[in-house]
Image 1 (cartoon, rainbow, N blue to C red):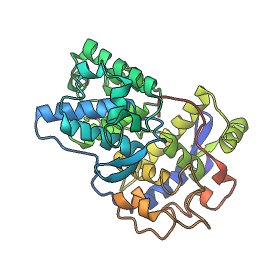
Image 2: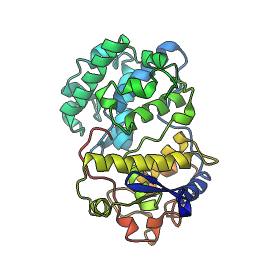
Image 3: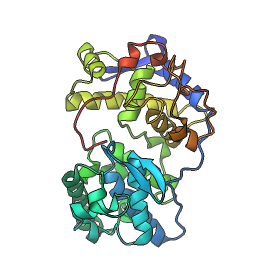
Length: 344
């Protein structure tokens, strides 16, 4: 380990001292029960729940265009996607069956992910891409797992990364939607199904955070990771396109930083992921300057961090003062990687 508690990770440094500070701050915030998690009572409900998460996380990327009302509640992004799909599952428990997902059309998908079931009212984009991912998931599931999502778990023995054989990450990598080398969707799927009691993980130490643009942005601005490559640092600050290898390097560094952070007292992978993700879509959102330093909050009425935790907001991000970007304008210039991807 180098001086200052930092260690190298590809083209970035993971600052373990900063990670400890982040952990100490966030461990004081308690999460409310996740409103999207349901705990099924029997094997049939478990299978239906696993199907729902498997297919929806497969297309859970680039959800920035989504917003609207589902069951009378205004939602945006990932929340809108999940609740709109949940509404369909409640109305038709077999909707996410592999045979049906193998035939789903763009019109069908738009109808599901809309306010009122009218495909022409859907704000979901990249339709053909998402339909192809759903078809691919169903085809591999039918070919290799008899169309049953629960057989993925059974074949893994409940292990994320077993000492021998294939674990959940290996088996999920067969599906194009879950082929990300940094495993964002795979870790997200396993984490939610583990929390719901559907896939009980036997080696939770091998769980990791699902690294998306929100978590990258916080890792970069906070100083949890430090970019060594000047060219890459400039690209990130200027929001210029990056290569796939640069994207992977930044995300791997963020994952390593958060893996260390989650091991500190008072946190685990699921709670840390939830806290950071809600901070990233509110306090440190991509549409405006971060709410820290001299910037006071104006969006408390729509803040999901406040809805889903016991955080008593003083008008600032919980990481204000801990995050380097809250005091350093140059650090605040960092953005997530700019790349077209199906991974997150």
